[in-house]
Amino acid sequence: MQIPPNSAERTGVRVPPLLVYGGGVGAGWLLGRLWPIPVPGGDLLIVTAVLWMLAGLGLALWGAVVFRRAGTTVNPFGGTSSIVATGPYRYTRNPMYVGFACIQFGLGLALREGWILILLVPVIVIIDRFAVRREEQYLGRKHGDDWITYAQRVRRWL
Image 1 (tube, rainbow, N blue to C red):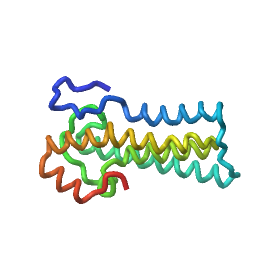
Image 2: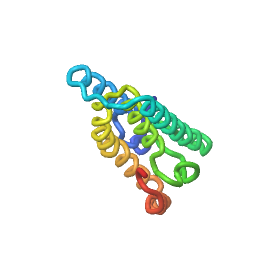
Image 3: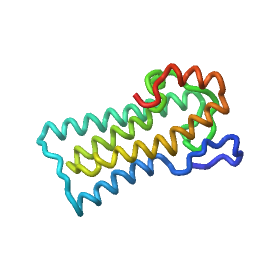
Image 4: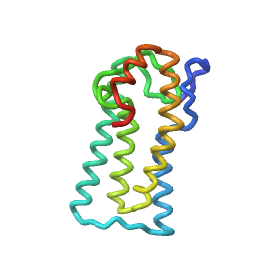
C-alpha cells in the first residue's frame, strides 16, 4: 500500500491494521507454545470457529466491495473520496475491522488457543486508538458535517 504524499490526504494510520490482527494471532500462537491456555471443545467448537471466520471474512469483503463501488479506497493510509453509508456501513463504521476481529476470534477457537482470544482485547484497543480514531479525525477534517451526521447515526464498532 502506498501512502499518499500529500499530508492532507493522510489518515495518520502508521501500521497496517491487518498486521496488528496478524500480530495478535501470531503472538497468541507463540505464547501458547510457551504457556498453553487450551480452549476445550469438540466438533461443535470447530463448527462455531468456522462460522465466526466465515462471518468475519464475509463482513470484511462486503465492506471492501462497497468501498470500491463507491470509488473510495480501502487503503487505511489513504484519503477518501466520500462517506460511505450503504451496505454494512449502515450498521457499523468499521465493518472491515469488525470482520478481522471475528476472524481472529474464530482462529483462536479453531486452534483452541486461549492466548489468541485473550490478545484480541489489546488488538482491538490498538486498532481503535491507532487506526479508527485517526481515520475518524481525518474524516471529520475532510468531510465536516457529512461525517458528523454519519458518525452520530452509526456506531463505531457494533
